[in-house]
Image 1 (cartoon, rainbow, N blue to C red):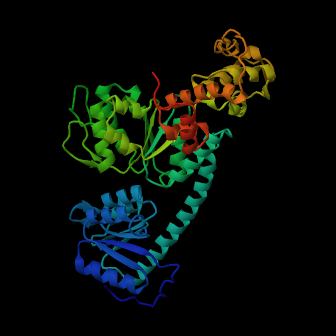
Image 2: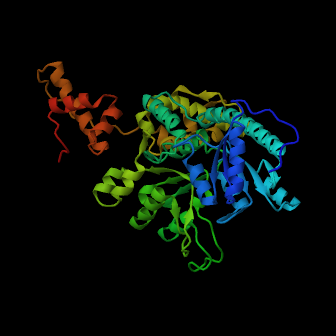
Image 3: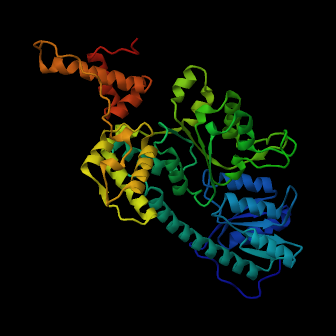
Length: 478
């Protein structure tokens, strides 16, 4: 390597970088590593694209991330530009410089278009190398600063549509913020319409993958015969009607997030395939023997209790334990009625903007009707009811007559028993039976899971056990 024509100052500690050299020429790579180490950097060598990807994948887990990668354009197991493309997609915080012994304008343009910070021709000139490294690291620092700013903005935007002050929702928000930065698989549970898709988007927007794709698929909306192709893709001729290769949702989510809703509807065969791709992060498209590796974070949701489906043999136990790493339970709207006014006002404000009208709120009678309605469709149903009311409203306030009849009709209430002669008893004894009924109903709703029941009731598990014992509740009642 020719000596530098003029001395260049060595980098300070702030400028020192962790650099990955990817080149199969061991003598050249060793000399380059020695030079970079003398300059104050920390150089690591990989002689194949496969080894480079292993080192990059382990960065952030076993070691610090690489600041920069110096990639040879011709490698024994891969084209250098293909490796550059993978680095650009999967390791966005790592800058890249392409090196080649066969320089051409076309090669340089291709490298820069693929995400390289610079293009250098061998033999390298030390001063040119230093300048190229400095430019790449400055560019990386600016991108990191911009990414941090975008992340803060995205954090506000991601949770802007989450409205309410119910304690359970506050806990949900805390969990969302905690898991967003990790790669952990998240399972969201709750009835249809409780906002599972909204929170999946929020986790993605708050995560380091936010610049990558967010891909969503409802497993229950795809016929079983097409679900495998939809998830994993297929090759031309794999089945009747497969006229061309098609990438699946997993590949579409490479470098980003894949949200699988209604996972409870997947067949046992599909569950087995999902288990494999979650464990190994690789799969074969339908009709192909070629194994495809994918880097997609997977979020899942179910509107049925998976524990119950496991117990009756409709859901694989090993898949359940694999996806139930962090569970986020979204309560139905009828259990957080105090949030209905804030949610209704939020949806009304949105509709007012879209309609270009000034609608300032709800009449007391209309809001009372909303707060007493059971909302079987949860938040989605509330949004639709408010949209309808905003379109039909004649004045600047949503009136009772603007709401659908099924909302304004008197809501059925449990039939009261006929008045019976008063039996003298203490207040403690009189309250015993209602408390017992509440506990039994809560336990049944949670499939007799004590931990979930205690969390739902806002008490700790020890208190729940004591109450069950004092009220004579031992297990599922016949």
